[in-house]
Image: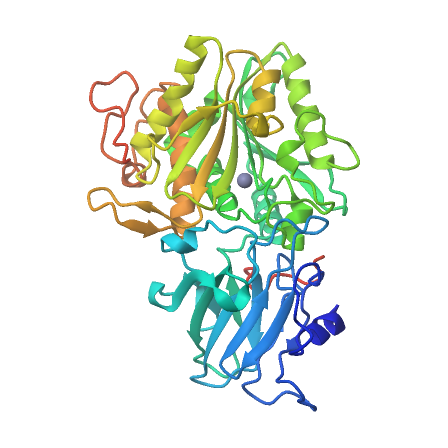
Length: 483
Ligand SMILES: [Zn+2]
């Protein structure tokens, strides 16, 4: 793999780039043409052979400029979007320009002010690059393709700098979170392994509810939440993490929700794609969100396992699966918003409006006006569409989308870039919205944090006032993973 990358990086051998990029670079020194011997300080060394890493090829343009090629999704060369790589062997105060030259999508939030993220030991938290250092444009040198160029000045010599399309969230990070939950021994949390992915990675399902709700014969109202069917859509994992953290905690609203509802959460539907650094596809190149109608146990095992659970719930007379929310990230729109379904039954259509309206009250980044309902043929195999056909008419199925970029600030309308924390805040607000939806009695001790996350507005769906403030093959661990 490294040899292929090294050969491809030689100027003169990089004429065509369709189909050449097949593996991730592995500690690859991008050297000038004709250079022999070990790289000197300042001749950059690139690496993406770690969990969720993606960088397929590096071309040395000059001492100050490098052309970078995203490795297409495994078995699906149509998708070149996610990148995540490290750079080292830098000089202090060295300035370089990186050009990502082979995006498969033209339309991108990089045109609307989104910037890549960076991390190093002097910036232990991921940061977005400053807007003034990032450009997204049609480049004549690359056949008129859209190119993302960003300038960067390295500050420390012995540092490793990691750059990514958006904040990474690996399968290892999820596993640590789940193991941490299990160690806490909380009576209201169970984590079970439903099965293994094609590459034998564990596929997990969390159940969060008060233990009494699991007694045989007890009537159960279930909320099912899934995330990361599209592996490059990392914001969906932060939103899901926010939901989990809130629901397992001691907040009185969380306790009220656990007493009333059973939350089933599958935080990572495509663990192989996540580990491989794919954007859209599974190991075998499938868009799993088009295979819900008839998932194959060998080609789409994670979907097969979760669908078995769903079918089991639909046959249990004591279980009512009331909500299904599948969390995604959107690459061309700002804000968070939902997609719902279109039904013949007008009342069913109307009932779908309530949850997004309530979420809009609770979440300053959620756009009710951006929420839409459709029955596109192209979306027939998605979780939202196929489960709406499988579940009874009282069930509500949504896709929750959150922007890779940011959300419009109330008042000014300026785009506020999303951070890991604000993605998780959206998750907390999604969880709290079930409290409003089910009209649960107000908690006796409302804590300050409950108010902080809420936008002003009525606290109950029956209350008067505005309905919404609607503004229009991985081998090593990700270097960014928390230790
Ligand atoms: Zn998606």
